[in-house]
Each structure stands twice: as C-alpha cells, then as structure tokens.
Image 1 (cartoon, rainbow over the protein chains, first blue to last red):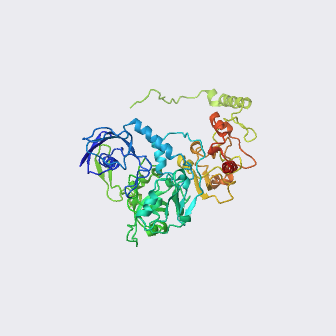
Image 2 (cartoon, each protein chain N blue to C red; image 1 turned 120 degrees about the vertical axis):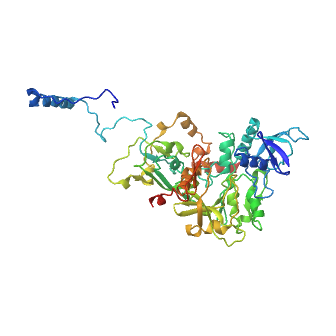
Image 3 (cartoon, one colour; image 1 turned 30 degrees about the vertical axis):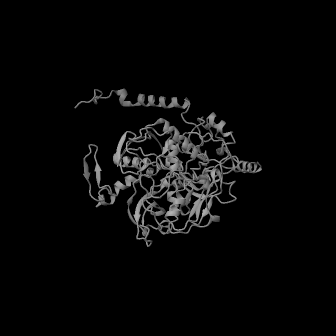
Length: 343
Length: 203
C-alpha cells in the first residue's frame, strides 16, 4: 500500500496505482472534483495515455524515502504513486497555467466548428477548453484541412477535428480482432486512416465513436439528426446474440423515436461496457428495447437542459424525495407519475 | 378587523332639484368629451404613419445570408435552447456538393420555424447565435386571422436576396471592425476560402 496526498486529501492505494487512478478514487470516496481531465487516457483500454499531456500534475514530494519534488509537471495517467507522495492539481496555479497551454496546443489545428459538429454538447475537448482553456487564440497560421471521409457506411471521419489521442486505434487493436485503421505519417502530417478508406466491418468497430473524445469519429446513422441536448437519454437493454456484447445501452430518444444508440458512459466519460454494431446501428425501434429509465446526466452538462431528471421524478424512479432537513420520504413506485395520480 | 382608514361610508341623501334634472351633469360630461376633439390623439394611423422606434427594436426575425447570398444558419440549435418561450424548432440537413453558394456551412437548416405567438421578442436567440445568422429587426409582425399563419417558416424568415436588410445599426463598432478582417474564418465566404486554398497551393 502507498499513502498519497493529492490536493491535501490523503488516500491509501495499492502499489502500482497511477496518480490519476488515485485522484479518481478520492473523487469517488469524497465527492470532490480533483481528478485531472484526460483526453487520451482510457481506463478500459490498455496502453492508452501519455500522448496529450492534459492530465499533468505537480509532484511536490516524490516519496517518503526521496522527498525531492519532481522538476517538471508529470502526466498523472502514466506516473505511478509512491509512498508519501504529495501531488497538486487544482490547488497549483502554475499547473493550471501549464494546462491552459496544453489546451492551446490541442486546439491549434482544431477547426472550432462546434455549431456543425454532432459531438457538441458531449465533447470532451469542448469541456476541456471551457474549463481549462483560454478565451482567445494566438494561432495565426492556416489550420490543416481535410475532407470528411466515410469509414464504411456507419462511421464518418472528420480528420480536421482529430487530436490524435490514439484511443480509436487502441480500441480496434484490443476490442475488435484484426485492425484495419491506424495513424499514418508523423508530426504535423499525422492522420487517422484506414488503408485506402477500407470499411471497418468488425462487430465492435462502432465503439470507436464512443471512445473518440472529440467529433472526429461520429455516427453516420445519427448524422445531423438532432443536437444531443434535444434528445432524451434513457438506459435500455436487449438480449443480444453476440456473446461478447452485454446488450446494455443508452438510447437517445426524441418522442418515441430512437435517434441513436450508444454505450453507457460513467462519470469519467468512459464507456461502461463496449457494445456490438448490431445493437448500435441496426436496432432503432423502441420495440427492440426494454427501457429501464432516464439516464443520469450531470447537471453541468447542456444535455440536462431537456429536464431529464424531472422526468425521472415523474416516472417515480426516484422513489425517495430528500427534504431540505435531510429526512427522506418514501413515495412508492410511480407515485409521481401523472397517470397514476388520476387513478 | 379594520385594515386601512380609507373606507368611505355610502351616504344615501336626497338629491336636490338641479341634481334631479341631470342636465348640468350631462353638459359637464359633454364638455369633457368635446375637449378631446381638439386634442392631439394618442394613436397614430398605422400603417400609413409609423412611430419612431429604436434602431435596436426587437421585432420580426430575419435569417441572414452572407455577402455571397449563402444562408448563414447552420442549425446548431443554440437559439432554440436559449429561447425561454420554446418558440424555435429546426431540422438540419447535410449540404451536398454544388450547394456551397446556397449554404455557408456543411450543415444547414432544412426546416426552421418560429412560432410568433410564442415568441416574446427577448432577443436571446440573436445573442446565442454563433454564426450571425438570426437577428431581430425593426419590422413589426403583421396581424393575421389564423393561428397557424403565425408559425413562420424559412419562406418568411430568410432574407430576400434582392432586398437585403441592413443590420449594421444593431452591431457595435467593435463587431463591425472585426467583420472587415478577412483573415478570420468567420468572415470568409465560400469564394474567399477557395481563393485562399488556391493561393496556398501556389506557395
């Protein structure tokens, strides 16, 4: 076990835990918000992280045995904790300044076409820029431009928006068998590509859409159908024939229409379970699914503009109401459903 | 319980002869009425006469086109989510090859509707718009007899290409200055972008 202090909160974690994982543990235990943001690291995929430098932290004290501070900010996703380590993230102004610099670099070639992009509203780069970035840009050169490419008939690639996080490459490597796409060229010329726009037709290839932190890989079956904040996310499941797929998904509905199917995402924006292409692209009827209820969406997200939580209350899924003094009232199933009140 | 001292007790006293005739009261009333014939009226004869209104008056909306005539709206939905009256709805469509001079962005609004009965003319849509597409103008929404006539579609909202609406009075000096800077992507029309691409290829 190692004792690590992040932003003045101490936690005991197993040896070999990364600083990022320890920070997320603190957030889950204490309800704080100190975990650094991540763009390329993905806990569900191996060997991710270390590319984007978004999750940098300051190490004030290396360990109990060697208390010297680390000379530069370190990427928390790739740095393991040591016993007695003291780390600063949100409490270090220098670090936040450094992160603003990282955001500026990530946005150098980004077209900022959020009004057009289908990812807007659930985009990690948008959140990162809003929370950690600067207002203006200092970049005056021509941004690199690519034509959008169809990767198969279900996925659209906008290379303009890509930040080269390699998440999709790792997904194809680890979740699907036999990858047909990767990153070609180097440095400023690097781009995601399939060999001569080869279609990815593996059963799990659709997951690259979910892992993409920006709008570079988007769902063609949902293309320009609706902005995400005008749809209502509900959790649903079905018996999927594919043994590797759990069939547990999130449906993005408008009225009774299922506009899009995605995997369920946790509070870190990572999918809980990868889903197969059949669930994602081919089952877009409400009758295909057993609906469990509205998904929990953070009230910081623009998606909560559709008052999803209120609907949850009305449907009686929240059986308990917490009063201001902290006491709880049990209402019973469906108590606030207007249909039940009539009876 | 007495709450105020303003109550008045109604007295039913006997009326005098002059009061019983009612004539002085009627004349008094008529004098007041007649006076108004010679006063300046409170109303104007709209639509022949129009009142002077502010340059930034918030009247009927317009969906602007750019210098080239391409529709600026990209159906981003920010106006609709900003709208407190939920008066705006839209459906997006993808621009096809060859339509670049019709629509400015890759995505455009195929359907764009504002329910003028719901609209409260607060101007939040104008404020939310990232593309300088929707503006409120100094035009007054005309009356009609049917409710469905008030759901304005693109036919009524999009600016007529031959009768452009000048909105420079609604924008600050800083904005007008910024719009002159053609190196910013926000100010480039399709033709400008093509020209830039060609120049870059030469280098």
